[in-house]
Image (cartoon, rainbow, N blue to C red; front, side, top):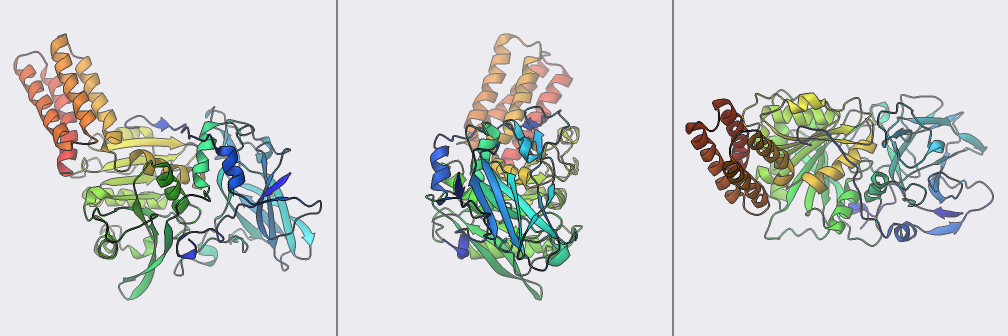
Length: 513
């Protein structure tokens, strides 16, 4: 048995502190993990476990042949004043292989196909004497969140003093804050043996990869000095000829600008996605909702204070097409409020775990790309029918394994950045398919059907390198549909349906010019 010391938060070498469409998609993301075993050992310092109970405060991840996951988390809290301590973690399991299974499984019942998303595991810690409280539990791959309740006070989420998040100096405190500690767990290819779980290793730090930096940056909001979390990618160059893109991430209830940078794992995920070459360097900014201003007024401090500050302080693009805004739960509602107020402020939006509250009549709704998302067992999961009804918007809808927790949100951030951001083709593929299906359903002869379909295929292919070319072909498609209607080869209804969808894509691409 070996001990794998995977530091969760305060000891990480981060930042200034250290170094679809209309059909919901169930994401079974397959990561390339051929070196997973080597990475497990590379990520850790390894030592023999003593026979006696280890009372080192904080989490220790143990490589354990008796654990169903191959790893056991050993947690120690030192609190000599406590009369009882409960260890709580969002690690209960559900069957992702069979989402219809209503069973909530205990960590000890892990088997391949089960994923975190069953809610909070809550257990009394053992009093080991002299103020030490201990517990052990099997853990699976990725960032696992946990906290403590002391003396049964469930109003106060107690952070792990040996592994505390790095909280914003102006953030929430006491009972107003939910304290999410995290611990990283490797993937055991034999015991965990499930591609969606293997994919969560993207949340674990890689010792040999290039690291970005992050810190809390002061910003003046009216008479108050507040802070933003700011992640700068590895090798950030303030003089780079091409300005960086920006991603703004919004927290949920009981959280603040700290959470995406800590339990949300943004710095690690960004570093790893860049290391894999599957996204481009971008600056990530986290803000606190309580200084953005009135929702009814469209969060004026976001528009008039935060954006100008970021765009004058850092080498970033000022074009909306190069800005993204996403949020979880209450932050998802902030995201949808922004869409309803002015969808053109950002080029990409990610409203997650906050339902689907976008007004389909909003002007310019076709301008941005919108990725709805949530966990399969999430009470805030966007309603698929409501998302599908947003026929004036360019949307995708993603469902991941998780509940209303960071098990879902970390995966959604990964998916957003890796598979959708700065990739119009990822959002427009379904729209093009709708047009192709519409063409195929007509009674046009083969030649006319082929001519229309070729234009659509070619327009899609050009999205990644020549949006003007895509626009030209889509306009040519609309012109041909009009000619076929004039020649009575298409009914007025058929032509109207094709033109309506094509016009939405055209409006989207024209906005991006």
